[in-house]
Amino acid sequence: MGPDRKLEEAVAAVVEPSLRMTLGELGLVREVRSRWGKVTAAVGQASPEHPKAYQLRRAVEQALKDASGEREVAVQLDVLDEQEAAALSARMRSLAPGGAAASAPSAPLGHEEGRPNPFMATGSRTRVLGISSGKGGVGKSSVTVNLAVSLARRGARVALLDADVYGFSVPKMMGLDEKPVVVGDLLIPPVAHGVACLSMGFFVDDETPVVWRGPMLHKALEQFLVDAWWADPDYLVVDMPPGTGDVALSMAQYLPRSEVYVVTTPQAAAQRVAQRSAFAAKKLKLPVRGVVENMSWFTGDDGHRYELFGTGGGSSLAELLGVPLLGQIPLVPELREGGDVGTPITVSSPDSEASRAFDALAQQVAGIGPSRVYRKELQVR
Ligand SMILES: Nc1ncnc2c1ncn2[C@@H]1O[C@H](COP(=O)(O)OP(=O)(O)O)[C@@H](O)[C@H]1O
Ligand SMILES: [Mg+2]
Image (cartoon, rainbow, N blue to C red; front, side, top):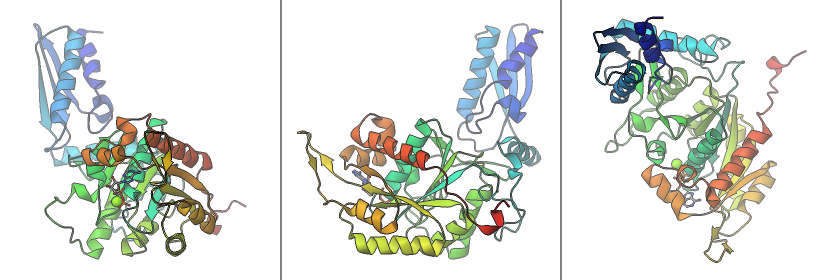
């Protein structure tokens, strides 16, 4: 094996920082040369506005230096043209585990191009966890984000969809300010804290209020499912839109295998919220799997648990819905602070009381397993 071959292999082994596959797998290694101590490489840059072009260049430089022993190397990034980008997206679709969504039904739900929705595929192994609440402000997004991180920390491959289109908060909570990379017709969700995320927040700026009209909104959400490169995760955790509005209904249609988890607080006038949640789930025809109580208590410096918002909201809601209470999350200032600075508490203080509560919740969710599908047409005779 000549030296050039060795260098080529080193470059091929570099992981593309946004696409998360090696340059070799992606077919992005253009040229690697070593002449009279001059080491150069040209690699393809998947998109003109590549948020991680700098990291890509540095990674290739480092690989060349390590493999050649030279201190000066030159790396050229060639932006793919439209045709090349289309070929790359096709290649990525086919390379993703469960690629090309092989077993998906052909033309799901009004998607004109008939591109399959990977989460509707009968062979999909992804558990879709819809995190809902009867009302706002109970910590739905905080639970979504920290549950996702906890599941990822257990070794699962986790994706997060922020479907709370009017009150999106996932980009901020996850500390993501980069736009997703677009390769051909593929939207690549950026990864934060081990979780691949998509949110409407990536596509509107803070100053412009979301004035999406219905059809556009539905189209956008469907695109998030169909045109995003989710790569067959173990879990898709969804920050669900509140209530039973249009958006919630179409989410239920796009994600018919979604399991519903209801977030509530200890004082939540259990009766009313329960009725609303039960009604919502019934209307959406999705199974409620469990209740999560948030802001359950505050543990003082004296070690005493202060139940600031009363008690029993979670367990009585669980009882009314006939599902288990899967977790209780304490009230801790660091949880709010973590959300404000983009580092979830499960990342910043993984051993804290709240993080352990999220880990326990993740374990419960993993433990109850996917819901069984009882739909007639899927029954094995
Ligand atoms: N367990 C908790 N301890 C402290 N603050 C919390 C907790 N859960 C949520 N919060 C804070 O309460 C506010 C509402 O939470 P959020 O997750 O945005 O609720 P929702 O998505 O239901 O509207 C946020 O400022 C969040 O940081
Ligand atoms: Mg929210």
